[in-house]
Length: 287
Image (tube, rainbow, N blue to C red; front, top):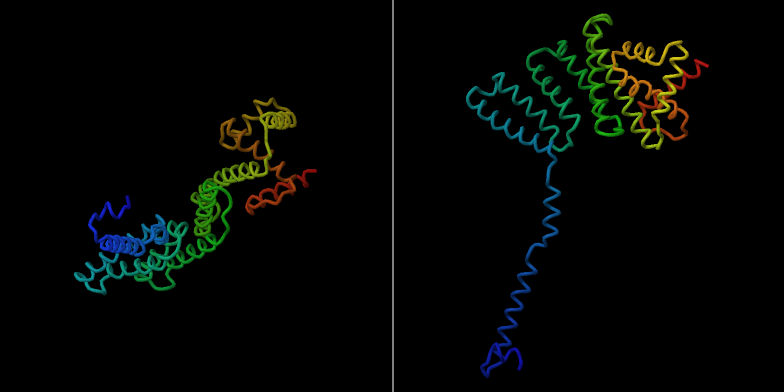
């Protein structure tokens, strides 16, 4: 039995056909007008901000609200209002940019500079210091990233110490603050070198075995006419380390440097390249 005769049992079968045709056309029109789900998803993803940008936008909204309140109560020329406006201007400058080093180092310094400029003349020492720090961080931000996030964090911490050292240079090398900063830099630099060497050895598939570390310690102890225990105790105490830490950091580092110095593969890490070049020169001078 035909389907139309089941749906529309009357003799006037053309009425059923017309109703079915109209229903089909209406359904097709509804589907055609609907938004394609894939296009909506893509446009939504394009508009999503990064977490750092989201924090920045939230802070800007809070500043605008606070500025409006303060301005109504205190007036546009009040110091608090001017400081809020200076901070808002700095933050607005970075709305469309990815924030990383900028948000943690440069942006806070620029905010402090904007506030300092409201209080002091252009040649004030604090303004000069802030400008110098901003310039140094901007130069550092242009450098190419190499290695893991942990390595990048160590590099950033080292740069922070270098900037602090440059700002305190007028105190002299024997000032306690300068001595403490240099000691802290030495520890961080060792940690940075070891991590950089480790990542580069893994990349080049160069292995350093425990037996190689033991042989180097035995060789150095023999040269110093000491037992291995005596030599390790002397060297680790001089560095302020445990014996195990000395083995893993200092002895391992020398072996890694030796293998990478003999490798023909080009290094990607320029800072590590400088360490290896100095090692090569020291080896030549000792021969």
